[in-house]
Image 1 (cartoon, rainbow, N blue to C red):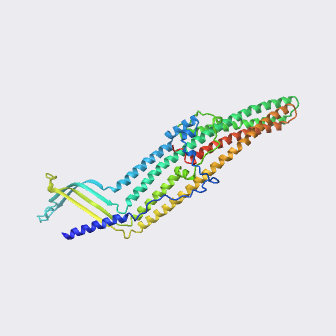
Image 2: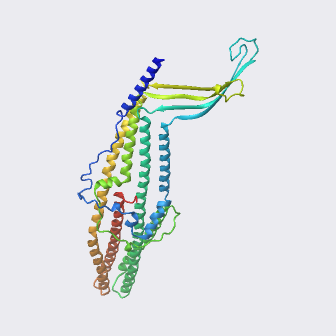
Image 3: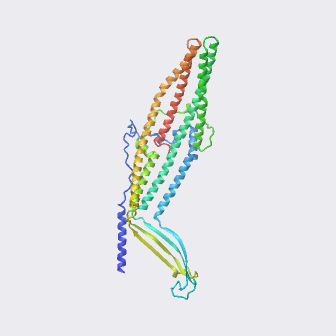
Length: 474
C-alpha cells in the first residue's frame, strides 16, 4: 500500500517537472526585424504625416465615386469571398482550440455468444446441441479520450491557426484597399476617355471647316486636288479614332460594373475637369507603411504561423501522455430488467506514455519541412517589405514627374492653339499651304490628348500611392 503511494508521488513529481521544463523547450515568437532605412528612394523625411491616415471617403472627394466605392465594398464578389474565408479561418481556430479538451462519446454495445457444448457464461460442459447454449451482454456508457498537451504541441497548432485567422482579416483588407484603388483608377480612366472623345470631336469639327476652306480655295484656283484629298484623309483618320474611344468607354464601364457586382450598364459620372490633383502627397515614415499594408501583415502572419508549426513539429519528438480509453457506464448479462442498478456500474481507464524512437523518419522529415517552410516564409516577408518600398518609390516618382509636365504642357497647348489660328488665317490669305494647317491641327490634338493623359496619370498615381501606403482600410 505504501509502495503504491510512493509510485503515485513519483509519477506526479515527474509530470510536474516535465510541465515546468516544457515552458523552456519552445521558443517564443518574435516578429522579424526590418531595416526601414532608405526604404523610400531619395526620401529621408521623418514627418509622420501620411495620406494613409485619411479615411477613403475624405480622400476621394467626388461624391459619385464615393457612391461607387461604397457599393463595391458591399457587393463586390472578391469582398464577399474574403468574408467567407474569415468565417472559415475562425471555424478552424475554434477546432484547434477544442483540441485541448477530451473527446467524449456515448457508447453502447450488445454481444451475443452461442456455443454447442458448454455454457458461455460459466464454461460448464453441456450435452452437445448445435448452438443451443447462449448468453447476451449489454453495456451503455460514456467514453472519453484525452492527450495531455505537455510540450505545447496543440498550443502551437492553435497559435498557428490564430495567425491564419488574422491573416484572413488582412486578406480582406488587402482586397478592400486594392478594390478602392481599382474603382478610383477605372473611374478616372472613364473620365479621361470622355474628355478625349470630346476633344477629338471638337477637332473633327475644326478639320471639317478646314476641308470646306480647302475646297473653296480649289474652286478659286488657290489650292490643288492634292491639298483637298490630304485634308480629307486627315479628317477621316481622326474620325476613325472615335469608335475606339467609344469602345474604350464601354469596356471601362463594364469593368467598373463587374467590380460593383452589377450587370454591364451605363454609369453616371462627373468630368475630368472637376477632379482636383493634389500638389503634394505626404508619405509618413516607412514603418507606418509596413504597419498598415495588408500584404506585409499577411506575409508576417504567414511567418508567424510557420514558426508555430515548426515548434509543434519539434514537440512531436517528446513523450506524449494520453488517456486512450476511459469508459464509465452500465453493463449486464442475460436480461435488461435491472440494467440501471448500481451493482451494474463499471469503469475502465487506460492511460499511457509514448516516447517516439523510430518512426520511419516521419518526425524528422516533418520537422525539416516545417523549418524550411518557416525560412521560406521569412524570405517572403523580407521580399514583400522590399517590394512595398519599391512600389511607393515608383509611384511617388511617377507622380512628381508628371506634375513637372503641367506647366510645360500648358505652354505647348496654348502654342498649338495659336498655331492653328495663325495657319488658318494665313491659308485663307494664300500665305500658308495645307500641310502647315494639317500639321498644326494634328499637333493641337496630340497635345490636348497628352494633357488629358498627364492629369489621368496624376490622379491614378495619387490613388495608387494611397493604396501603397496602406490607405483604404478605414
